[in-house]
Image (cartoon, rainbow, N blue to C red):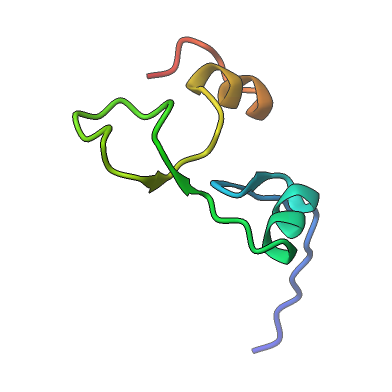
Length: 70
């Protein structure tokens, strides 16, 4: 089967960076995204984890989502 695929954009939001440039820079510098939790609501704050360094509000704004979403 012959299927044409069009890539119209790319991006990344992760524990090591927001955007392709930040993420590539972190990978090349061998920086880890593992650390203390700041934004995730959990009873396990003592455990290190990979967390996107943005609040829910910041993430919604960045993605163009309404503030009233759960």
